[in-house]
Length: 307
Image (tube, rainbow, N blue to C red; front, side, top):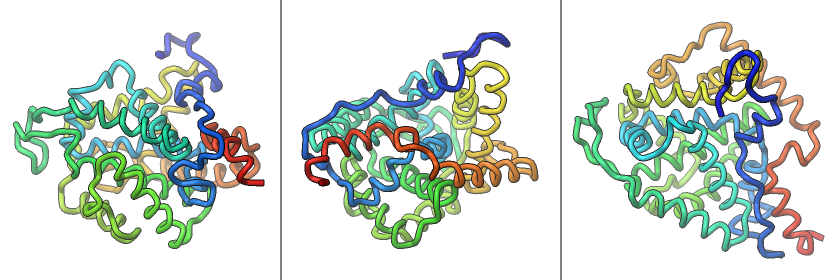
């Protein structure tokens, strides 16, 4: 979907529809899936506004030179830059809110796609010399992708929906370990606590494992512009700017600079305003607008058990 000029593009409803995965199948009645209604994964993951963390999560992933090479060389990213976000959303929501069969099938599809993703980076980036081999099934790369999804979800929820206690953060992190194992992260690599997760993300940045190279920067440009390219003018301008502001506000400072994202007074004020507006507006939204259809479908699937 591309903007075709000052008179082209779509309105906000069609635009949002292009970002969301398809509505889920109903699933097996009474099957709570992997997590269930009492879990932090359901309470946090049901919020549609978590979509706003998607670009930051993708940019964190691409800051790993081996992930950037895999995405750049083995996907139709430039033809549809939002495909990775939609695909990640679809798999995540299905695993979290689907029945056990749906969750297992979604994870198996992702693992099957990753089985053929392997190669070598073309140019040196950071501590990775040219020719360094990569494969999507590498447990360390799977761990980094998993950590970015967990970390950005917690940061976005805490800042834009409601403050999270350390207990709730720890509960979400611990429950999402089951998610990580499904996608190829060995038990021994998974963070044992929320503090371990925070330490891991910080060390990946501070120890120089992450480095924003030319390929990551080019892909980032596609991500940040794609979020508004289908909108009619002038909505495309505002949406594109907000996407960049949200990504810049969530990224660690060194990576923000690596992606050349502006973070001056104007961007900081816009980030704070978006956070305040969202915190005020989200609690007032009706359930069918606020929550993912996957969560509402899971609730209907469990109605006999919830009475």
